[in-house]
Length: 141
Image (cartoon, rainbow, N blue to C red; front, side):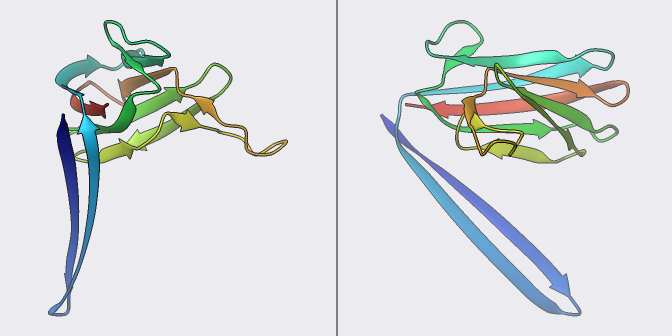
């Protein structure tokens, strides 16, 4: 087993005043990682991975998931991230060069009747125009 360490450094120089913020995050007992780079085309959603109670090809266990990152490596187009559960769906636009990070598979897209969380069942992507290169990185125990 391994320990995964994440560091995020935010830095800005405004009128010769530098402001830095360093956030660190560690996950111990890591048993698996998955890292892929994909080329996706616009016109339809491309499912990049699924979540379920048991792992299989292209499917990660909801109980083992610890961290995930999706990065839009494209320099010319944004990418729509579609996050779906059995009952809900959320969409985000991921700008060029940006990343979306997750630390759980729980989600809700509505507060009607209270916050009811469901496990994410799939994550799909679609470039707004043309094609895009995206990367994902997943950690689990």
